[in-house]
Length: 114
Length: 242
Ligand code: SF4
Ligand code: SF4
Ligand code: FES
Image (cartoon, rainbow over all chains, first blue to last red; front, top):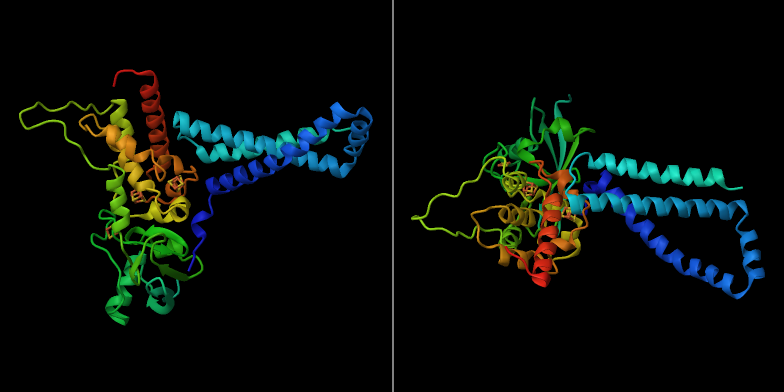
C-alpha cells in the first residue's frame, strides 16, 4: 500500500529536476577535467577531440548539458529566494520561469552552433 | 451523478487489504460522510477517527485516492473524478486499525521541536504588547492556524526517509514560537530544531504546502528556522546582543 499521488505537483518535479541535473553535472565534471588536461598535454589530441565534438550527436548532447546547467542554476536561485528571503509569491510561477529559461538557453546554444 | 459510489477502504493494520463498499450518493457529500455511512449502515467494525466534522479538530485526515486530505471538508465530487474512492490511513504513521493512525509520534515531535510555550512572566507583570502589524507577529500569523491534522506529515517524503525528522507541522509550530515575543525558550528551541532531524533535513519540496488544508506553508516556516539557526550560530561566533 504505497499511494504515490501526493508527489504529483510542480515543486516535486522541480526537486527531481534539480537532483537529476545536479547528479548528471557532477558526473560530467571528470570528463570536463579530462578534456582540459588534454589541452595541457597535447594540442593535436585536443584538436582531434574538438573536431569529434562537432558531430551533430555530440552537439545535441552538449545542448542537453547546457540545459541541465541552466536548469540547475535557475532551480538553485529559486531555492535561495525561498530560503534566504522567504519569497512566497508565485513560487509555482518561479518553477515555470526557471524551466522556461533553461530551455531558452539551450535553444540559443543550439541555434548558435555552427 | 450516479446513485452510488464504489469505495475501497483499507482494513487491518500495516498488514491488511482493501475492502470494497457501495455507498449511496448524496449532494454535497464529504468523504467523511461516506466512511460514516459504511460504519453506521454496512459494517460497524470499521474504525476511523473524527470529531468536529467542520475542519477544526484535525482528527479526520486520511489518504484519499492517493493524497492525504481532511476528509470532513473534502467533497466526494472533487476527488472521485472517475466515480470511485480509495480511502486508506495516513502515510508515515503506525496504523492502529483500519483508518485510524497512532498520532503519538507526530505529537511527540511537536514537543521535541520545543513546540511548546515557555512563559517569561508572572501574573504580577504587565501584558506584552503585540501589535497586529509587527513583523514578527505577521510571521507567526502565517503559521498559527495549524489544526494538527498530520496531512503535511503524511505528504512529506523526508519524514518517510528519515524517521528522526521532526516534520513540517512540528517545525512550523516551532517557528511560530520563535516569533512570539512573550516566549523565553528560543535557545532550547534553536538547539532542538538544528539537529539531524531538524530544519536542515527539509528539501523544500513543498509536499506539505501542496496538501495543508489550512494553506499554511511549513516550507517557509522551516526556511525561517534555517535563517534563525544561522543567525544564532553567527552570534555564537562573532558575539552580539540578543
Ligand atoms: S518542504 Fe520540507 S517539510 Fe515540507 S514536505 Fe518537503 S521536505 Fe517535508
Ligand atoms: S501544517 Fe497544515 S497539514 Fe500540517 S498539521 Fe497543520 S494544518 Fe495539518
Ligand atoms: S472532523 Fe474535525 S477536522 Fe475533520
